[in-house]
Length: 62
Picture: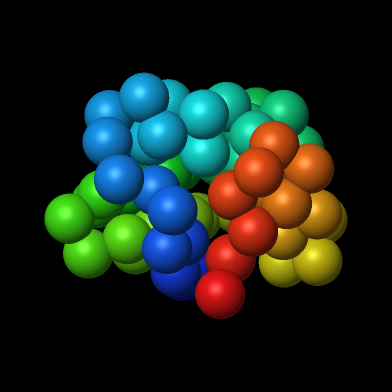
């Protein structure tokens, strides 16, 4: 699944986004590009749970 996170702009943001996703699914594979604000996630967790985790840490997907 893919997310667009407008305020993800640097490596620190990528680490925070990855940590939030992996707090829901520790086995999730996360590939993030702050230049395009896109995050690709391979996870068995429901999208809603990942969205909630991202929103909770200030990176709400658009």
